[in-house]
Length: 166
Image (cartoon, rainbow, N blue to C red; front, side):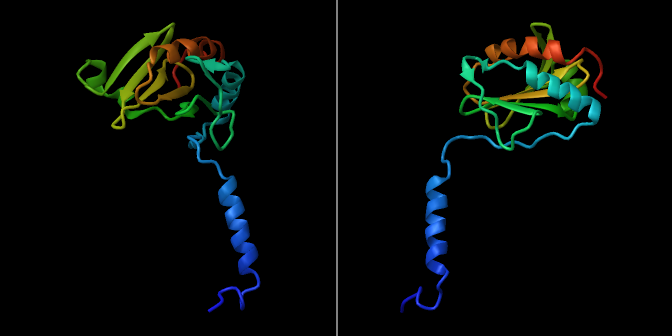
C-alpha cells in the first residue's frame, strides 16, 4: 500500500519534519523559567544584566532561552543566573541560621551575602541575601563555585543595592 498516494501533503510534511529535526540543536543549551518580579525589581535586574561580566569562571556568556534581561548563562553545562526570584524558603529556616542544615548554609563572598543550597542532582544554588532583589545562581555539579561567586560579586554590588528584598 502506498501511504503517500492519497495524502498529497504527507510527503512535504515529512520532508519538513526531517529538515526541522536535522536543524534542531542537540547541544546543552539551557532553558530556564524567567522570573516575574515587580517593576522596581525588574529595573534592578535590567541594571544587573548590563553590569554582568562577559566571562564567569573563564566561561563565555551564552544566555539561556527564552532570552531575557532577567536571566544569563555562561558555559555548557551552563552556570545560570536568574534575577528577581522569590525568596527561597531556606532563607528563613532556623536550621540554616544555626548551621544545622546539611544542605544549606549562609556565607559571604567579596561583600555579597549568599544562601548556598546543595541540590539532589549535585548542583549548587546560591541566592543573594541582604539585597533589594534576590539573585539566584545555579552552578552545575562538578564545577568549583568560588570563582563563579567572585566573578559575579562586583556586578551584583554595583547594580543591586543592599537592603531587604521583601
